[in-house]
Length: 272
Image (tube, one colour):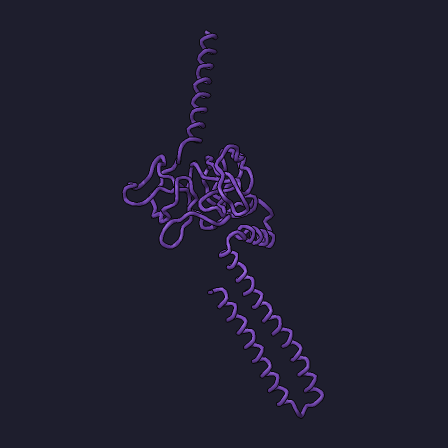
């Protein structure tokens, strides 16, 4: 009797282990485990596994690191989809497990790493700082024997790994706002050095910001000094009070005009 019970328990354990192994393998190989809908993907060059963002008019591939507009992953054959794919839309995975196109742009990817968008259009990368992420890697990718593509700073490798999709803001590095802001600025600047148009936009924004800062600084310093000198002049010569006050008001108006010119110039630079 005891032998039968032992054999029964051993059989149950063997069947459970086999089913667990098959389930894990199936999860890793399935294109997408989600009941999803079809969406208007306007980017004709997007392929299965690409990261998509939402914008006016439809969905296109992401091309910015830690993009806050992340919407999901294009997958033409998910497990289930809500609407008929023949309606013209394409399924986008927004939750569950799916295969994602990733690169080694931000280093090798390990199991459990956060995955986010990158400056390589449609492809993901390992997230190493706080920002918006696609989800968590359920596989590793170190680029061994993988396809090479051009990155913003040289060659990188391209592959696919399963990702548990959950789009959210992840605190990976220090939560301090200023540190994150400067880190994001530095990353964006380095990534866009290879793209003259994007680098030109960044330089234009920097120049516009400097013009505004300088115009306000000049106005503040000049105004503070003129006020002090005007008060001293009135104290020394009370009979010239009206003339001094008129000169002070005229000075203030000129300073406001200079500040306004700085703001208008900055706006023109930004909109060029």
